[in-house]
Image (cartoon, rainbow, N blue to C red):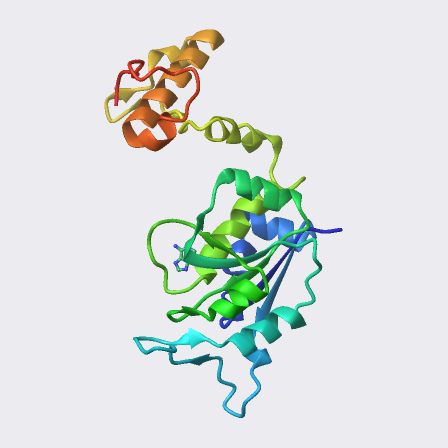
Length: 239
Ligand code: ADE
C-alpha cells in the first residue's frame, strides 16, 4: 500500500502547500505517496458549526472541542496500524529516528492543533502522540505537520535519487554536516580548501570528519556529548 498522510485541520487549504512543489510535489503527482487533508469543521454538529469553546476553569483563548475532534478522528477511519499524532509545542521533540520509523510505516494521522489547545480527553481517549518540531510556538500545527511530512516523504523509496541518501549519514551518526564548496574555485578572494581539490580521497574524508566534529562540538554540545568513543578532553579544533 501507498504511504499516506491523513491530516485533520481547520485549514485544509494549507495542504499540500509547499509539499505540492519540488521533490515532494513531483512524488505526490506520480503517486509515490498520498495526502488527505480533512476539515475538522465538517464534524461540527451545532447550527453554528462551532469547533472550539472557552477553557474550563477560565483563562485566555479557546480550546478545540472534544466531541468535534473525536468525531473527526473517528470519521477518518484510521486503522490500528497507523500512528496517531498531534502536533503540539508540548510534544516530544521530533527526531530523525522517529521520522525514519514514520516513513517506514503506513503513514500517520496528524491532528493539527489550534487555539490554546485541544481537550485532553481526546488526546487520552484516542491515544494521540504529541509531537513538537522545536522549542518555539507556531500559530497552529499545520506548518509543523508540513515539516514532519516533508521529512518523511524524502525518505520514501523512489522519491529521492540515491545522491542525498548519503547526506543522511553524518546526521544519523549524530554529527552536523561538514562545509560544502563548488565552483568557482576562487570566490571574492576566498579559495576552496586545498584538500578538497587534491584528489586524495582519504584526506578529504578525514578533513570532512574533523570539520563535522568541530562544528558539532561548537554548536551542539548536546549532540557532541552523545558521540561514543569521545573522551571529554578530546575537543576538536576550529570553528
Ligand atoms: N504547534 C505550535 N507550535 C508547534 C511546535 N513547535 N511543534 C509542533 N506543533 C506546534
